[in-house]
Length: 179
Image 1 (tube, rainbow, N blue to C red):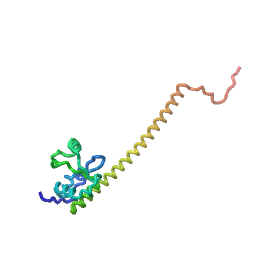
Image 2: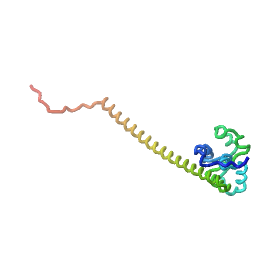
Image 3: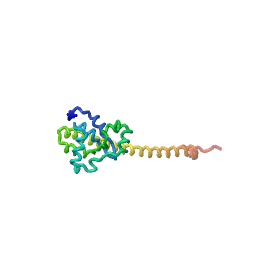
Image 4: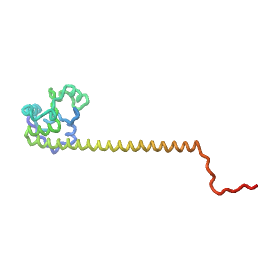
């Protein structure tokens, strides 16, 4: 199979996002998907990584375990283990994706990596704004709970007032009684 040249300007953002997975509490991309996007064979990508292994610490790249692959298959993140080419794939974090482009040294890899990094940044921004919204909603819920308690107190006072009316003094002029 020859190198696939992909025009990165026509790769929809949704396609790139669909290749970003959440594993081990971080966003990752699998080597096979990256190889496809970079226009190289997965085995060539892995070879370059192995030649430059010192550039890929564990927070840049790690190899998936059998259990993680099984989980991804069961959650339909990947169609089957065969989709991975028979070996346990490498997972690349945001930093690993950027380093991979430097190792591959192709213009396509650089351009695709830039798009992917931009998506990682967008996802992070969305997560932050989502967290901020969640905090605002929690504040509103607390206010509503407090309002509910205050309304309950007011109704209790109304109930007490209705059940135990105090005798009222008569208002107005007192007319003396005639004898």
